Image (cartoon, rainbow, N blue to C red; front, side):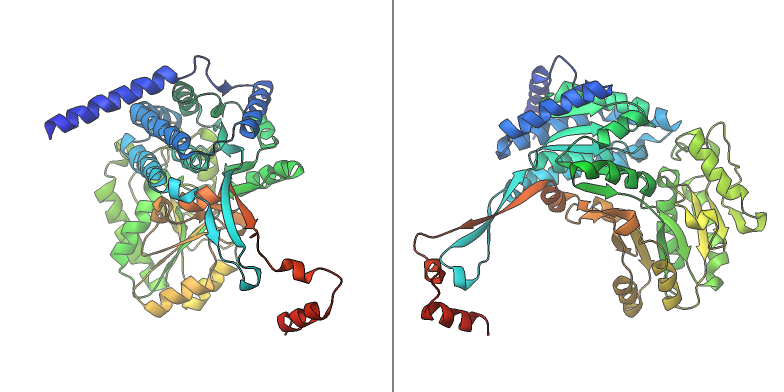
Length: 494
């Protein structure tokens, strides 16, 4: 066993050295609009003249991505923490590195099968011809990365794009500059500039990026910016996948185990200090359970985040602008609506935002209209389950919806009478890490889905192919239309 481990370690070292030796001397990084456009033109030409149709090349790119992540995970976590003002390395491992590694493994296990030509059914009328579906690379895929999970939301789309045989241009978030630079430098060391180009820069660069005639553009971020990205892509007829946000509700049935509900909801609300697009945004629960929910939430915080000002597991708000936005929600509420879950106060200097519960805010208040994207949790009451469903359905369709309870009919009612990007039953967030489930929004929360096979097909052209047989009867249906044709039509058009 020891000898085998030693051999594996030596092989990994050799593989890493080989990848680094193959790395380009000139970094494939664009910092200006002119550089970005030149890089795009080069990648587009390569995608047309040298399409990546073999699995071996795609698997090699996935191997390179895996080795890059493995070699740089500590430095990536450090850079992300610096951008946030502080974020736990453990949180980055759990929420970003872990799903990235499992996503790569899933793609390497299934990608070769996904890319094979598939037989499709055909009507007996056209036999012995047959139908096929041939997956082909689209060409150049553009990826626009947000700041809240800058590693996973870069790597996740990259996995799908590489598995589908595409070349990539990726615009990193200007709000996470230290990670953006670290990631760009790593990509340049492990990938050929013929495969991936990383684009750095401010909003003007992002605007120009969204106007490039990509074969597909994937954007993750706010709904407001998503509309601008879609408008910028429209003149080129660039297809888009928009992974947006919105308000992801929690519906608590009256038979739910409240302690379990609080445990899962608070986990989802405190991870990354609530800066998660599928974080529980508000809770719909019957009024008699409000005080018990708040009490259990305080106990949960004391257990999981004691001494929150100096707790090594609790993240900060990304920047001062976001902190002021979040603080503004609280300032607009009356004091009796806000229930502190810790003894700490919000601190603009350290950007510490302790979790709070807001009891029964007005439905038209900012905290109930905007995506909160912070550890503020409104509790709203409902009288009947139909009332809760109606409350959700009157609002834009959410990226995620969470329902807790054991009553089968109640769970089925929520499942069947609501529409959301994704649904978790007795859980929050975890559906995003299931590589056999498509991830995406609906309506205001996004368009299109990716991850796993869904992502492979989204970033491939699934070309339909009709293969005619040498012996076939279609010539019998050519003009002049005689008696045989009329008999055939009479039979077909019954």
